[in-house]
Image: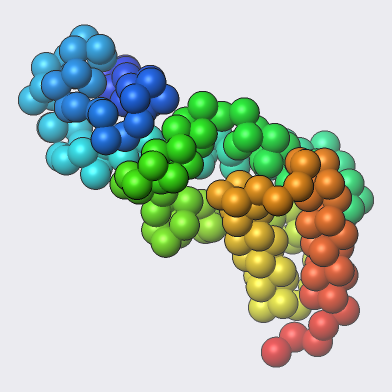
Length: 193
């Protein structure tokens, strides 16, 4: 991303955190970023394009944290899964942008919520890819179809616990890590289909 593009996304993030996505105005974003309104439109096309860029940057940050947590624990499936899931849940719970998205959605505005739910392809694809790359190094004999299903299922469950948390982060991460072990071990012993 260029400097102007980064500044625009930073300004949009700050405005979203301050007043929700409904309160974000392209002119105000341009002013905060120190660029013209036309520059914002040239870079992103529409407010939806800006939302997508904002979502992309947050997903990239989260996925970077997932990759780091997995790498810290190598082949220890439970420790790696727990660390990645816990870091994701804790980071999401403390992330002011995620809080703004969820708070806005509960108040009736859900323009950004689909990036975590119904339009979550970006989150699912990037996160699942990170898990599959890790698993490819540490579970090389796993059935690819079963492994893909396992990774996708864990990511979907983590996202659902971000959107609607039920228990403390540590407890949820522990239970999801236990499930991840079961799914990954099953994929490692499954016969290729």
